[in-house]
Image (cartoon, rainbow, N blue to C red; front, side, top):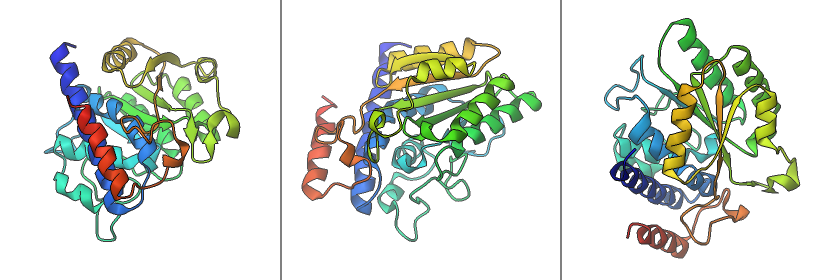
Length: 276
């Protein structure tokens, strides 16, 4: 990956973050903190790595993506819109009664959404099914998924982890958004699921730990995952909740709260400053 590609992805990630703030502000509700923390990963996947066609969202040989932490869908919607799956003007209708952009991803109505999400823990299981399906059909598409660190307190996550290892799903790459915060506070104070690396190693996964905001590290990890044979890969991405917005960063209160007008203007100003 050259510097030009890296800068392009960074630019897209910042644009996605602006869209996230816009969506949640227009809706007066939503989950900005965890959406902002995964923008770099989504920008990398959709603008560089994944084999997709916005003009043909149901292309059978496309790579798949499942947002298991579905409440952070403003990030996914922004990414899909900027990538050309639907018009960016729809983002301002987020969470409105007549909008296709619900508070959680809906595969039946939103172009580019490969799996509906809502209940935490279900997405990774679906991703496993998609990866197994590719194996059974001798397809070469890859499956990517993002789960939250708080979400990993769900027992179903670990059932899926065992399943993926049992069936040697080396076409599955899971990102764990490790921002350290969940709705009720720091994860270590709720039901501490760490250490993630040792747990996944015990569940027979290939484990890689990175800075989830460093595009070069994301790229290197994904390429390593593609080379790993016989086991699934988890990329533990250390991130900052609310990344890019000064007053949201590492603040648990911004897990599920919309900015008011002054906060909205400050957030956009912060992100605009990142463009320079």
